Image 1 (cartoon, rainbow, N blue to C red):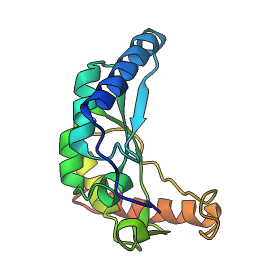
Image 2: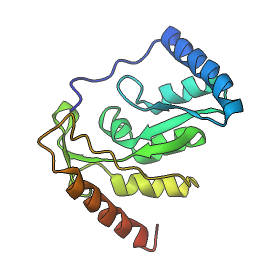
Image 3: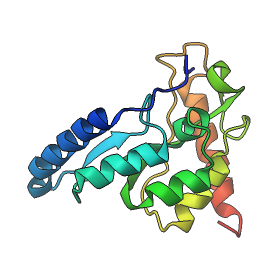
Image 4: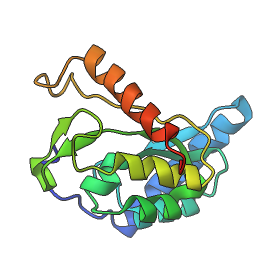
Amino acid sequence: MDSEKPTTPDAELKKKVAAGLRELGTYAGPRGIAVLLESHDDFTAAAVLREIFQLAASPHVGLLWDAYHTFATSNESPELSARTLQPWIRHTHLKDAVGTGPNRNYVLTGRGNVPVRKQIEVLRATGYKGFFCFEWEKVWHPELQEPEIAIADYARVVKGYFADSHL
């Protein structure tokens, strides 16, 4: 999966990214469009993302929270990531994996050590009303189960999470 630990973006890069997001937000807002930055690569730490969104200062800019990456790459708990990033979370990518660090391998939902259930719980606790999107990277990982199997399995597993009384 991830070949190495992300590099923390320096202050200048964070300012450039925030300025670009602000400019895109200014353009997108009047058109009814939101601009989303995905938590990925060097942009997975909640503190870094929060700083960028605060600098961007645009109601038309938000986060596509790839919860796998904040957990697996930045070693953050779902509670920390969701609590820190809640004002900006507009969409999600959820997936499961086994292993640690760069030696993770994607697996069907609920069979790995990524806390997908907890990610959903904390999102719901923040009042998130968006989609809980499944991401299956078969194109980049041809050894994975076929999408027809993985998508149906995700729907079954997550439906079970929602059926539990505490969710």
